[in-house]
Length: 184
Image 1 (cartoon, rainbow, N blue to C red):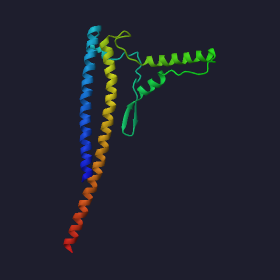
Image 2: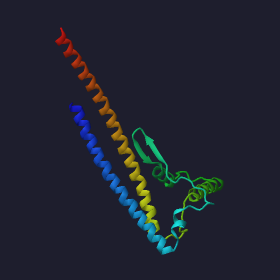
Image 3: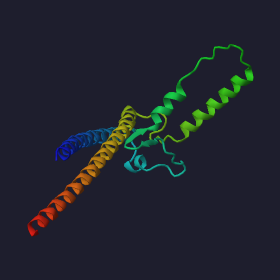
Image 4: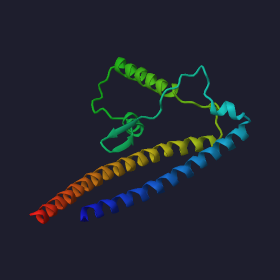
């Protein structure tokens, strides 16, 4: 019985964290929506041109999520850190061909990264649009946190269900044994 109480208390804490995280998510989404409205009114676009992507632009996912057993995290953060770190080469004997190849590879990578960005306000976007984009990137981390908490809640629910089933079997067994003692 103590195990069920501990699991129930753990589930209660997780649900509390989940609700707090949902409220944070709602606040961030409201801020982002407000910033997009400000940017729209500053720039003078109609709502339909901001919300709907251009048909000629191919939509490429800009965020990828890694899923480990019960944790969810953004892959984008890890990749950007490792690709943007410049490493020093201790040997100073480099040929010009190698350096040109590296430059062309880095140019290709930057072109590939820039292709997938959807910018409805153009390159010179207003400050509210930039802050809305930042809020939306924070929203993705919050969504990953919500998914992780939900996975933990599901795990606790499964453990509680197994314990409850074992208690039911024990009660049935004890009832059966008590009925056998009475009949003898």
